[in-house]
Length: 402
Image (cartoon, one colour):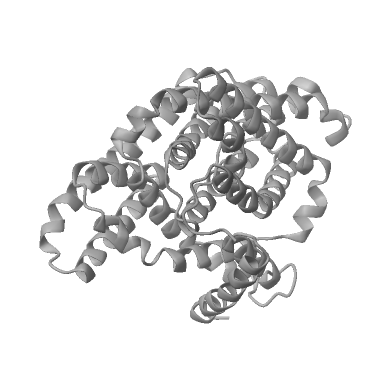
C-alpha cells in the first residue's frame, strides 16, 4: 500500500470513528484509536506492518505541533499564580508512580520471571519500569482539551504538569539505568555523569533549541503579511525545530514546548497559535489512528501479568501522588479530586525510553519491552474517557460534552 492511500484511509475512517465515539458519549480520540486498532496488522490488516513503520515520521511532526500548542497555553501570569500547586504536585505524582511501580514489581518479580535473582533482575527491571512510568503523553491531553475547549486553572495546571512529566521521566530513567547497570553487570561501576550529567545536558540542549527557534520566529513574523503566510512560517518553524532536535538526539517535545511558551508570553499574539489549531483536528485524527495501528495482539498475549501490574500501579501512583501534592499545596478540590485521572496517557517518551532500556539490559529487556508496549496500548484506550471525565467534573469544558 502506498503512503498517500494509507493516510487517506486513516483520515476517512478516523472521521467516522470519531463521530461514532461522540454518539456513545466518548471523546473523539477514543474512536480514532479504535479505528486504528481495527485497521492494524493484528486485526483486519488493511494497513500492513511495513506501511505502519513508514508512517512513523508523522508521529514526530504531530508531537512537535502538540508540544508547541501546549507551550502556547502556558501563560506566565497563570503559572505564577499556580506555582505552589504545580511545584508540589509534579514531584509527588511522578515519584509516586516511580515508587509504587518499583515496589510492587520488585516484590512480585518471582511471579513474572521465576528463577531469577532479586538484585540482578527483579529490582533493576522494576526500578527502570518505574522511572519510565513517570512520563505522561501530551497528545491525548491536548486533544481532549481542544475537543471540549477546556480553559481555567485546572486545565493550566494539567498542561504544566504534563509538560514537566517528560522532563522528570528523562532524568528518572537516567538515574535508574545508571544504578541498575552495575547491579546487573557487576563489572560496571556507577557514574554520576551518566546518571545526571547526560540527561541534564539533553534537557538544556532541548531548551536552547526551543529558545533559538522562538527568537527566529519572532523576527520572521513581520514578513508574513497574511494569515496564510503566517501558517507557512509557524508550521515551518515547528518542523525545523522538531527536525533539528531529533537530529541532535534531543527532546523535540521540550524544544517545541519552550518555543511556544516564549512566543505566547513575548508576542501575545493569539493568531500565532490559532493558525496551527486550524489544522489540529487533522493532526489528531492521523496521530491517534496511527497509535491504534501499532496494536500488536502477540505483544498483549506475551506481556501477561506484568502489563496489568504496570497499568494498575502507575495509575494508583499518579492518582495518590496528585492528591498528596494537592493537599500539601492547598490546591482546589477540583485539582485534588480529578487531576490524577487526566495524567494516565502514556506513549511516545515511554516507548522511546523502554526501547533504550531493552538494548541496555538484554537479560530482561524483551519481557520489559513487551509489557510497557502492552500497557501503553491499554492506557491509550482507557485514558481518554478518564481525561474527559476529569475536565468535565472540574467544570472547565466549554463545549457541551453530551
